[in-house]
Length: 250
Ligand SMILES: NC(=O)c1ccc[n+]([C@@H]2O[C@H](COP(=O)([O-])OP(=O)(O)OC[C@H]3O[C@@H](n4cnc5c(N)ncnc54)[C@H](OP(=O)(O)O)[C@@H]3O)[C@@H](O)[C@H]2O)c1
Image (tube, rainbow, N blue to C red; front, side, top):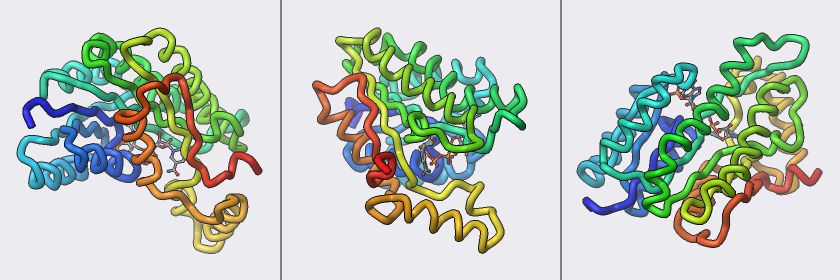
């Protein structure tokens, strides 16, 4: 237990990040769960995991709009268990950001949460990950390649994260592997959930119709691939794999 591997997952208090945390934990990892606003959910998740195995989970808090807070969680994360083997950059803001409406504050929020934090956490932890022959996994989006209308800044931020995945895979080789996962429709975004009934339902039906497998993915589909990259994909680096039920082909 004392020697078991450690994963730091950003934005992991709920949804896909929490599923990744549970999957790594179920396979013997100790987990560091980063959250910003969802502090209660992060603490509750740690409580659940620590009940299964004592001292196997801890929560760390930072707003990635604050660069100092971002750097501090890298230090705190490393100090907590004394090692980090896997960094998973999962945190993200997602909301419309069209050319007509986006402000510099939207640019900052979307780039800070989706890519700036991922870059500087990777920078801060590169030495440790290198010593552990570890890996970085970036959670991208199929919309990095196929833009979503009216979400220009978000799509640009995810494209930057995809590009960063490839750049860092070269820079950190041969000791650290860097890969990405591009989810398609896995969980409905709050934006659609909050639409008045009919409109939200119409949007959901249109999305489901556009997916060859005719269903949403499951957070576990993302977690399984993340765990594969960490534990099985020894000869894979610089790859960004779509998990989207074939939607990007249509
Ligand atoms: N859901 C999907 O179907 C889907 C589709 C394509 C791509 N993805 C990608 O998959 C990943 C997980 O998706 P998701 O839907 O589970 O994500 P999400 O719920 O939209 O966001 C994950 C977490 O990011 C954190 N976050 C946002 N802004 C932050 C900031 N300024 N500082 C620190 N943390 C911040 C939030 O933490 P707090 O709640 O603690 O504030 C949030 O819980 C994301 O990278 C997303 O872009 C998801």
